[in-house]
Image 1 (spheres, rainbow, N blue to C red):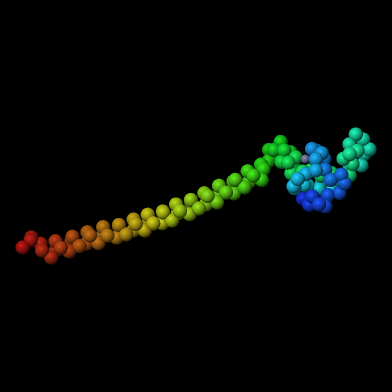
Image 2: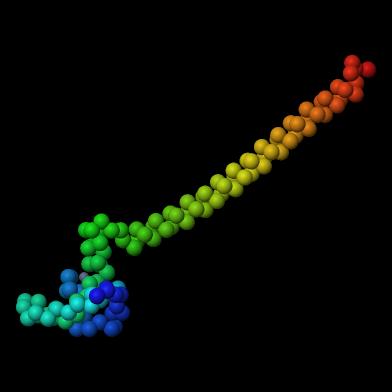
Length: 123
Ligand SMILES: [Zn+2]
């Protein structure tokens, strides 16, 4: 059975996180499983939910990253992407500058040759 995000208002009894045994304040995962055994866990009998806080702790123990870390990475990706675009633009400008400089060097050399050809030994 697939785990699904569950709206807190739609939680079945006992309406608590199976792990921390609290009424979650925000996101909750419905495991789709039920606790039916009559044991010391009676107060948790019913649908098994896991709150986002416990879910993050489980994920961390398994080496996963949190949504906060994912968001920070996305922000960093956006910043680096914008920086890369500026660098790319700067490289294009440098390339155009190099082309123009090279063109003028050739033109200057041609002008110097023409001037010396027009007046070979001076006046
Ligand atoms: Zn919990």
